[in-house]
Image 1 (cartoon, rainbow, N blue to C red):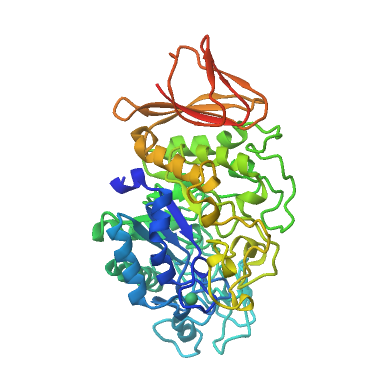
Image 2 (tube, rainbow, N blue to C red):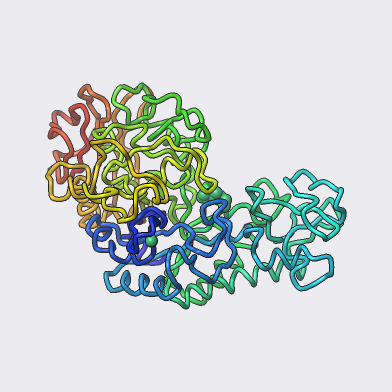
Length: 526
Ligand code: GLC
Ligand code: CA
């Protein structure tokens, strides 16, 4: 484990919506640098930036046109280097978003690959050998290029898949993962990684990390082989750099050398029962609101989450971190599913479970999900990508541009939450997040890798209690009751413990049982 991860708390920034310093209506890199002290004041000591590279922005920058060039709308490569330096001065780290599975259809590599005459890039993307042929089960595009073939897509139409080879090969055009072309693709991605590591970045969040090799085995053995190679190169080159995968299968990703994986919201999985429980994450009309564990009146117990999360955590805790998120640029905002008091308890829980937590910008002040038309391939995700709300000024302090020139409109509600309105106000959501993270950093037992054990989790019961730490770190007992009624939590054999941190009313301790009043979270020395 890279040592700095044990105390890392990440803040995800969608660069177009954080802070605009030149009044063009779009957030920029100097804007992120200008707000580093704010991010640090939350207790976040690491950033993940969504892609900030040259792009036609048909998928918000996940369609990269030039991996080594900061998009003009965000500034220059020098601005990004200045951000790395300013972050490091403050003891903070910066992860960039690496999109290895596909490029934009406008990338120079793809344009060369589409030419009829064979050239260095002909085999860097996945092309069939016949312009009238299908994609052998994969989405494909035909009729767009002079080359006699169709090409395979990784995501949207604008995102042709780079060639890392095939596991099972059924067609002559499907190459093995160690073909010269597939190996050249690996080298090209490593070259990009090295470029930004040299510039000062501290690692990468890796987009669709499980998608590289096609026709892979169910446990992604071939894709894991590719990642073992790339993560080993990273560790040999810059041992303190880290990689977090968008994968949601730590038994695969962490064994393949990633430092961290995310628990993501997949329909009906453990995460989806924790904060949101929408019937459809791809649906802009969330259903099932009120049934997530942290909803006050929910009948859902914590086992819905634990049944999924715990086996993966146990199987991989020696390999890396399985990380929990408040949300991200692909999810509906947490404020759409939980009210403010519910979110306090959810954040206290997320930030005291193992792993390095990821806080999505604006969740700390309760930014709301907005119903908006799609922007840059966002579709339902657009509503979670609106400008950060700093103060009561024009455009809520995000930009000096005319409102109609903004990347996306700011929250129009008269009571739109802002940093300024909550800063220094005891009990505000912002100050609660700061309190929780201050507590986390002060307690070695809450480090990302400190041991974890369930103390109490039961079917049809609202309370959940767990232990963190060991003899080296000291031991803490944490307990949460998201319901409105008091709950007795049997903790047989434990002594009375002093509460070190409480949200809500102070719990009481009688005869080996803890009574948690409704809507409380508490952590005790043990
Ligand atoms: C990932 C990103 C998402 C993007 C997709 C294609 O899921 O998080 O925003 O659209 O990959 O790159
Ligand atoms: Ca700008």
